[in-house]
Amino acid sequence: LMAFICFVYEIEIPCVAAGLDFLSMWVMGEVLRKTKAFFMRRTFQGDKLYKLIFGQYISSLVSQGDSPIEFFIEGTRSRTGKSLKPKYGFLSMILKPFLAGEVPDIKLVPVSISYDRFLEEWLFARELLGTPKPKESTKGLFKVFSILNQNYGNVYFNFGEPISIHDWISREVDCPLSRPISQDVKNIASLILQNHSKLQVLGAFHLVMVILYDNLVTHNLCEMPIGLATNRFKVLLSAMRALSLNVLLTKGDMLKEIHYACTINPELMVVGGEKLKFLGKCEQVVQAVPSSRKSETIETGKGLDPNKVVLLVVYTNPVAMVLFPPALLLVIIATNGLAMIDEFNFLCELFENEFPIGICDKENNVKTSEKFLLEMDCVCLCPDGVKYALSSNYQLINILNSIIHPYLLGYLLISQYLVQVTDFTVQKKLLADCQNHLKMKSQSDSNALSPIYSSKSFVTHCLSALAQIGCLHKQTSCDVPDAYSINHDRLFYTISLLDSISILTRTECALKNKL
View 1 (cartoon, helix red, strand yellow):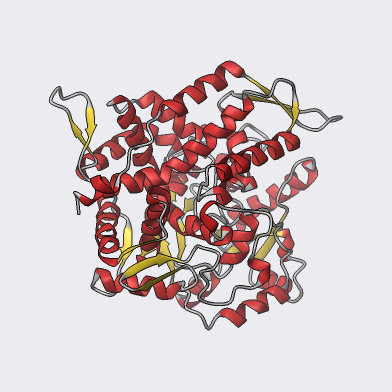
View 2 (view 1 turned 90 degrees about the horizontal axis):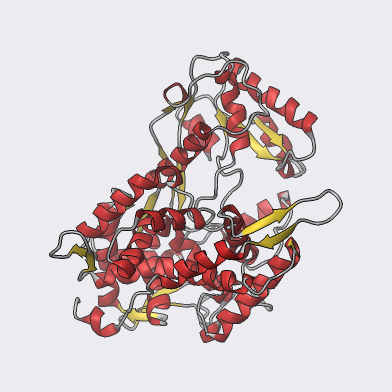
């Protein structure tokens, strides 16, 4: 798509960093190569020669090439609708010619690509539920044409302002590629992710998905009156505009926007009988769903289809990315009455794998989130001028709480399980044990989001985060598999903090009083 846009606007087609697995695609591998794609391994670990040669190739493209370079800061395409933690290796290679004095400056142009509906949505759902990703193939590519008669909404490209490396990094002559990644590189990667978030374009489809997600998590319901849905749509739209996000609405009427959103994915939602419905229950199928989409190994509370629950979360995540910081601050305020910066920063670091935006600018995150909560009437200052109290915008409070609640609960359950681990535990075994415990615990509580907790990536992110903040110590050896030991003191502190955060009281009575 990027090459097509460049061609239409008569811009030099960029050289594209592509994964090595695309090279083996019949015909397409050669087509990609002839349209300036170059192929790279997913990881360089253990092959210093390959890393050195590839790094020199990138340096020559930057310092001597005539074409721009297109690369993905996250290293791969996100399956979850959220940003992934950035990969620093390729970015460091891009910056090397500047650090070595070979070029006076390098401009990085953030480009956000937003989708209403993914062509590969069911494939993504199965991957998140544990099915291995199928190998890229030309046959699989051609299969896509069989579904293009459906409505998939729009794809939005939004180009940001160029980032000048000269303004961000102090040059270090003859800086070796193997040197430790500098904080400057991490800051630039974080800045790119922040730009992607601000540049993303949201449509009515995403807002309706958030409304249905909140209704499921907060009220355990798969449907709501269309009037209530319209009110929540207005509240959410106001929140998006308060954050200066790009929301594209074309119908001129809230009700028409909701009806249009349902036409984009009629397998997930529909308006019928004056109600907006999430078609998440196993028996609720508007169109025939191939058996390959069904999951036989995952069960959910309330008889929900795990694939559809996963897709509901995936399509909610673009909004969740920008609402997570204020949602996190909200639950801290609800617990302590104060915007406690230390607790906020600690939890930001804990959830960095889930929501990596703004990690390098935590202080500004607190100020922005605090201002947002006050403007949206979620919190108000007490008479003493120091403490906060929850205010009257219950609809937005519920939405913010529904976004953060699954992560607080999931990480708490895993942390509580780890207390029982006494000896060194092999990484793969610990991952499987935590996954089984989380799956069993969430299903016994009839949790609607148990498919998310059963996802391998959720548990992997949690264990990685706990290791990063010192709750786990990873033991690596050439002769034996990687293993973890537990730092119980640090783990108890984390459990205490997660457990103390109030899960906000939500009642239909309080909500109805605000309608």
